[in-house]
Length: 164
Length: 146
Image (cartoon, rainbow over all chains, first blue to last red; front, side, top):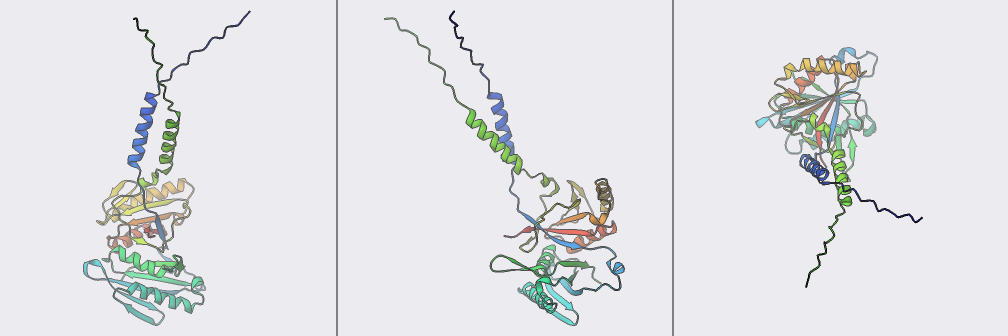
């Protein structure tokens, strides 16, 4: 007996609804997509009663005190630094470069500047000063951008102290 | 003469490649969608720095506090009008951290995203409030300068 082959009918699938949804999803993601800038951190460790908790026999770090004072429109007016008996005041457009140079000089006394972990920077900041300038000062003591784009790390330990 | 009617075969469009590409685009956008945006407040304009270090690993528990220029604090989409009123929020967060096995408040990382025009005194006040709640690890967040 000869077997007749039956050609099956192809069941049509209506894709319209799915494509509609997919395009709506696409539109949603395209509209809500936003390219955000990368963010970075300055790490600060500040226990409330650090002075009381310090053991007597622990080697105390050298502290560079950096005072930031505010001037007109809450912009920075001057930077005063104090480390051991060294004091200096920096003003003008290059004040942050001068601050970096001072920190580098103090670190070089500790030996290799890159490994001088026993140095801390303590900021005493005018409360009115715009936060922008505080970050600039933190940047100046934390590292120096080299011409090749790399960063020479300076002081890692930073803390704040209230003025007065 | 009698014309013979010959029906034209329907044009079949193969939609498969288009659907493939569309699904891949959706997957791409879904992966790139940054859900941490919820933690960020759009009105905060961060100061920039070329020296700050990008966060490499997520801490065991972190509290993100956005400090607006006017002194209000935004946390998780909720606005607190003054820095002074933040203590209850911190207590709640420390409790939540303890439930996630971060029992010591000293291990909690506080990320401060302060507006660049905010007075530094407000940032210090916020830090002090956190210190009073035994928090001591702070990250001052800035925008990376290329």
